[in-house]
Image 1 (tube, rainbow over the protein chains, first blue to last red):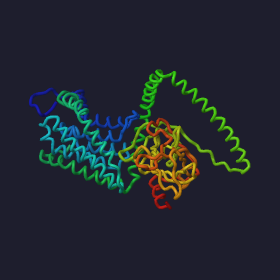
Image 2: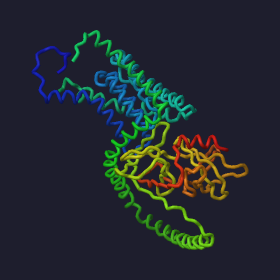
Image 3: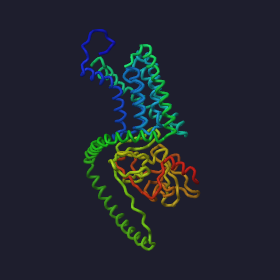
Image 4: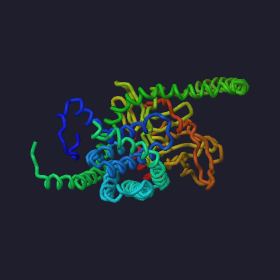
Length: 182
Length: 287
């Protein structure tokens, strides 16, 4: 299916095209679904912090390992979803997520070749910066000093969640989300 | 489709991110200038999601309840003893309440008391926690053709939960009393002193602006006050509690961490203000 490998292939049938589209849409769809599920009445503690932490993790992971699956327009939509689900100032989460993606895309050529721990450390740095930016943005837009605890909680959740989420995401990256498998 | 050269396509691909960031920045400014836009977008999303969340809420609540049921089986004996004791205590209070109601009626008859219009309410399930990092709000699922208005007051079985800030066709958002923007004029029951309950984004709202010479006492009951015309008087809010830093807080009667159902009251006669406006109102007013 991919243009990356040379050779003669059978013409794409409708079924295989749907399959490939489904695989390509997996990163965006799974992230959006996770964001929606966190807001569902599951009785999750710290849903707002969790939502943002998951958004950071997914956007970072897919931007580094499969940027084609999560184009900036999709990240924009995910940010808007975050903004609207939580009562964040409109556009703030979009801006933070797009900036996170921008940096992740710049770093991906280096990060792709690193081991898990180094990628995790890089993500930790970015997550802390992104959480701080969310706090800063809320302070500027709300024009008052806000407690830092939620931002710190978000950063810690994101750093802690990364290994938990990266394992299934990396698995999906090799299998479910791989268009070559279609 | 227009065929572009590879260089052109690469250049365009590189441009997407900065352009989208500029759009997002513009959205921040627009959202700041026109709060109605964000509200309309939120209401549209809420209306789309509320039925889905509502459908999920039923089985989830049932699941939680059945887990609780299994746990309850274990200490059914202790529970029975506790319930009998509770029942005896409640029967005593029922008699007290009946006597007080009788006396209340007599006094009202003597004073030619003009009763206020009984409030109408709807009961609705909470289907999502829509709070953000710096916002505490919940989403209520409603049926099409509902009569809920912005400014309606939400109560659970215990006390005041918050106020309706956004209303859609099938959903409403309730700003909780713990939200940073929440300002509730209250009254301390023992001293009859007015005060203001301010949301802090934490679990407990803070109590401020009580008059000179009055000190809220630990455990003192707090009810709403009609000052400001936003809340009706005497809705149960909570009890005074001093935290470790000796700051007066309110322990809410409502179980804000485990909200399943709320009643949305339309008290009609009180003027309804948006929380932003309410906050300004109190800031401008005398402390």
